[in-house]
Image 1 (cartoon, helix red, strand yellow):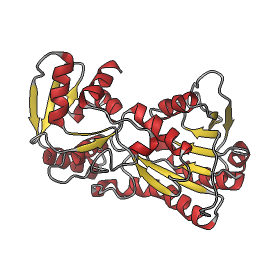
Image 2 (cartoon, rainbow, N blue to C red):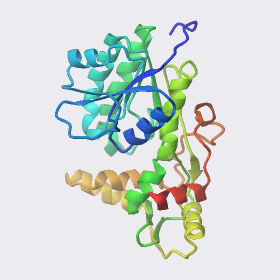
Image 3 (cartoon, rainbow, N blue to C red):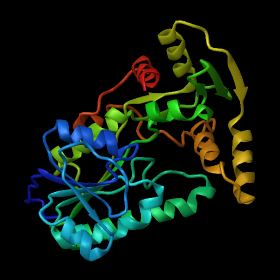
Image 4 (cartoon, rainbow, N blue to C red):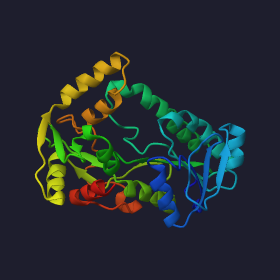
Amino acid sequence: MNTNMTITIQKVAIFGASGNFGTPITAALQRAGFDITIITRAESSSTFPAGLPVIRASYTLENLTTALAGQDAAICVVGPGGIGAQVTMIEAAEAAGVKRFIVDDFGWGPEFRNLPEFRAIHAHRRAGWELARGKAQANPNFTFTGITSGNPIDWAMKRFPLMGFDIARCSALIYDSGTEKFTATTLAGIGQSVVGVLQHPDETVNRFVKVLSIITNQTELLEAFQRVTGQQWPVQRASAQTLIESGQRKFQAGMGGWVLELVVAQMYDEGQARCVMAPSWDASDSPLLGVKNESADEVVAKVLQL
C-alpha cells in the first residue's frame, strides 16, 4: 500500500449483522457514529435494528458490487455456512472501490496451531484471507484487516457447558490441572475491536490484529464464579486428552459434535499454549483499538447477566 495514503472511513457495510458477533459489532458501530448499511441475502428472514438501511440481494459479483458502491469499508462476520461467499464479497468490494475489507476471522487467526481435524474448515476460511491479501498487494486502493479475537468468552461460556462451567447449575468441569491459559475477548470487546480498526485504518492496514479482553484459565474463572455468586460450585474433573480422543472418534465416524469437543480440548490441552494469541493485553493490539482489559470477575459478571 502507498504509505502516503491516509484512509478515512465513515460509510460501512456489514455482512452477517444479525449473527452472534454481528449483533454486538453493529451496535458498537452505531454507538461510534458510523453510517451503516446492512447487506443480507434476498431470502433472509433475519431482523435488524430499526432505522438502518438494509440491502437484500443474491450474492453474485454483480449484485454485491452494486450493493457496496459508495462504501468506505465492508465487514464480513457471517456464520460458518456463509464463509464460502466471502470470496465473492471481497471481489465485489474491490470492484466497488471499497477501501477496507475486514475479513471473517474473529477466531484464532492464520497462525493458529489447529488440531488436524480442522484443516478443511481452516482452508475454507483461509481462501478469503489469502484473496484479500493478494488483492491488497496488487491494488494500493484496496486494503484488508483480520481481527483475531480468540475465544468469545462471555458468549461461549454461557452457551457451552462443555467449556467447563454450567451456569444454570452453578457447577464446574475442570480439565486436568485447570491452569492452561487462553486468551479471550468479550462480545463488547469484539464490537470495539471493529470500531478500533476503522478508527485506526493506517495502523491496522493489511494485517491481522490480535485482540483480547483477558488472559485466564479455568481455575481463575472458577474462583471468580464462586466470588461473584457467593457460593461454592461443585467440581468434576476431566481430561483434555480424553476429550480429544472422543472428538477424533466422532470425526472419523462422520458423527456430529466433534467440532465443539475439539475446540474445547485444544483450548485446555495442557502445556501446549495453543490458544494464547498474545503474551499480555499490553502486547496485543487491544490498547490501540480501545478493547478494555477485563478481570475474571468482570467477565464472569457478564456471563451471569447474559
